[in-house]
Image (cartoon, rainbow over all chains, first blue to last red; front, side, top):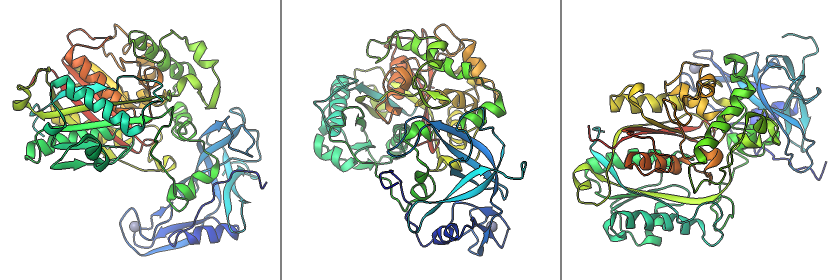
Length: 139
Length: 380
Ligand SMILES: [Zn+2]
């Protein structure tokens, strides 16, 4: 593991809650208390209505596979081919991730398949939100 | 801007294109600038406005010996030069300067004196995209395509065909990097980079540069070159994160920029004789044709398949071979503009006979930004 190239996020005051949540196994999103818009990535105001009255909450962790590529040129320590994907969370926002726990082939990785979050520890403090096929099937 | 009030009067690429190990990036800017000034018989002392990306206007002014009264360092990626043309037109019309030099130079392959594009681990891209193993644009810019293919019915063959048609155009250009014909099978059997993209669907990596010189349409008469009038301009930006692009089947920045340019020019799509759509990857002409309004959503793949954009087609597109075959230093937009100018001057090796209106459409970042310039060799 120590030889693997891993870009590490540097949390900022505006994103710290997300990485703190990830460490506890929770996928944190933000919601506007004025217009109830849910959004990602984190920021201390609502990108829909500009209200600063926003709250952090735990998402369900359920998502569907929105789009992806299968990378064949691996950075050091990564096993190619592997997926670089964008998933659509049940709550609406989309995020980049890797789909894990399934063959990294176009046949296995079907768009719109049901996924659920699975955190992967990559440093003392950073747990990355990755996604695996949903245990319960369709979300 | 008022259509036709400003013109491109100088245009040139670097003396060499492709592999240029004996020039640094600022040297490539200068080589192209010197060629463009020579093109119209002026020198650095005649320039009073500058715009550039990849280096700073300050570096450029100092290196070439220019004392500008107007400078623009807009840097939104490969379409920055489209934005520079738009901003320069406004500056000239406002009287902020008279003669603007726009330069590009990039040592994409040889990486001599290369400027850095450092990513901050604390930026939103650094926190929410970089940790998932992307290896640059081939693994990021390409992510929306599977969604487009599923929702719009695009086939792998149609996507591969984009590269095939552009190679036909490149074959006519002596300075194009790749000129040998290829087939759809060649593309679909070439090395996999990031499924569904194979190497022949990804742009080149080369060294080069280009420069444009602009002035008012009135002053354009004082120079020996054939003026190419700016008749419509547009620009927009959307997001620095490909994962946050609002619609994976259409670029908002493309739609906004394109509409602005067409509205300003007051032309319809059937008036367009020649089209350049920045093609860092094979899907970009497909998104561009639809987002600019040349095709309905989902029709562009078949439109290209039916040879509408190929030599002899009704809408010649990417007639230099594009970033896929001509050259791609990193910020390709300058080369799209150069080919549009050549077509309007009547000097392209792949000249579209009688072409009067050219649209040059660029992308910046990964669907992050856009600029559209509409040119004509006739003043409206
Ligand atoms: Zn709100």
